[in-house]
Length: 130
Image (cartoon, rainbow, N blue to C red; front, side, top):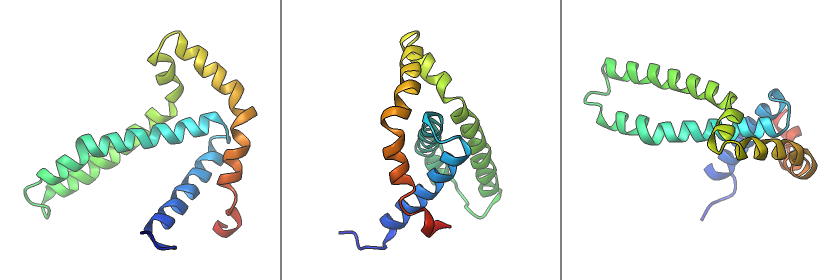
């Protein structure tokens, strides 16, 4: 049972604050949503497939291995950032030519049906973060 103000509530608030910043910087549309989802996907996949097993396999945490791990983590995050910027390309490459058609349809339909509900969720407590 989760208690109010506990870690799940704070994590939800942190995610919303991060996503709100992404929304503003990336223009507040489908591109912003795609960027955020792609970045989270790449980071989670990287953590599960490489980072966690590599960290567990370290022999001595107080050695240069830890510094190398930290540097590799930062480099991987930067690469994932760039890959997330290119998320429309991944959609098009997923099912050519249906991916391009789906992407075009999404860019047309998103502002009409999804933008307002996302903004109302995103900015419902914006005054508290300022």
